[in-house]
Length: 116
Length: 112
Image (cartoon, rainbow over all chains, first blue to last red; front, side, top):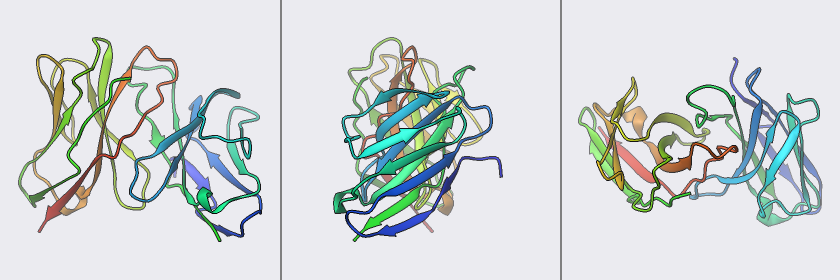
């Protein structure tokens, strides 16, 4: 499968614990995005990378959240001291900067987080 | 980016055309209209996009009004697998981030 893959697909954790999600984008896609989606709502933009550079962060991304893309390939999203309000689906997407249709993002199936 | 307005929900019969409207009355001249859909428990999927002209691909057709203040996504022969939430998004093509700002979308139910 050459699509965007995310791991783990499901994570249940206790409040206060740290969690980390990994995203492997489509090969050679230089843009990578993280979104968060709660039940009944559309996805909310969190942050995006071009290659290894994190170029934009939403104000939704509190200081408990950190995202990295160290070599411009896979990315990790870490949430420290999780809170029940962090329970959501975390979606990763990738795209290629060049080309006519640069607004086409390819999404993974998401990582669902449940904080007890 | 321009905001969009979509009906909360719609339904249509299997095999019939599904016409999903979107209002983007504040769209500017260099903003594109994109449509995505999200089937339950999956990530969003790109459908189609356009600037001024009507567009068609293997999935759908996009009709943009002449004043560009609204558009309609047409699924010509809806199937049960088309049941999903459909998002209309307007983005500035020259925006280097190309980040998508999703609204609440239209929940389309295709009835057998």
